[in-house]
Image (cartoon, rainbow, N blue to C red; front, side, top):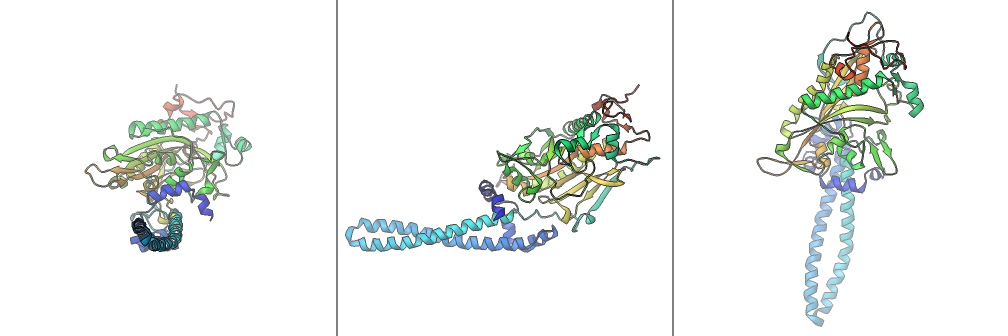
Length: 463
């Protein structure tokens, strides 16, 4: 089967050990609830019934298998005793040996059934998404998303606002054609102030999150093993969106979330170590396999882009408070850059596969007269932690528990650059640089118009 080729032996063994994504006791005891939750996520609820059939087959076969194994152990001892009694018991011992030989075939058959059922259980579990939190609005697609708040007023211009795909080339800071010549569609080359702004925005975000919000900066690998992508939830569902690197069979990360969520894979943390907060500025690589024909102009949907990722690891009781906090941290970037935005709660049908609840931050883009996503802040609860086997030891004693993991963009750097260009444009064609960013660009207040590539490194500084 195709999905068995996708799911390698090592990954399946690892997921089997942690009982995979949703707790098996939940799938077993509340199948109707799980089926309804899965259907609300746009996934066929028959998956839950399929899981139940394989679970029943496995448990019944395992019961018989254990019984036969016990009979073989008892018979083995009896045969030993019969042989010890010499010729008088030789025929009886031979008869018991024949019985056990026949029993061996059934044992091997049952072992194969149990192994097959376990494979099917894990493969089915991998396709069952997380259950949405009760506060998530119901709905099939983004039209049912709920606007929670709107922050800032879209700027009013006394001229026709331009989109970044016009502003960038006119300023000589973005070159879409040269990017395409180098690597193909959906790649861009930045020149002069384009490259400098990208670098400045990333540094500004990292400083804000580490110095004011208490995150530890991490520089993770940009290539990861296959099991890391199973752990964070990208595989097997989003296989086509990943760049697979041969010959060592690693993957370019689609988001910094992947290595950060896997930092403590297989570990047991002490409760007093939590919460953990990590921030990383990384390139992200996405094939965008399902987005052909969408956002083909400009920087909105690129195969390569930079993003500051925020990840928190916390105790279950604090995770939804942590989600609100993490969202405020991402919002702070937009506030400091004076960019208007809104916060949207995603409905059940629009949630990411591994997430129980998600807020999207959508920034206003004057050139498109629309709000566009610039960050997603999510709580995966224990969904990812079960995959990566990250648990904690409660401070008051008791059994080990799975942590909750949260992640969010703080922010996508390229999309922040888009928002800055479009919201800070002037009638003369220059770009105003927000005060919070000026220390990262040598105090420059403005990128003047008409620079072209040769003059793109110049900027207007205060007198």
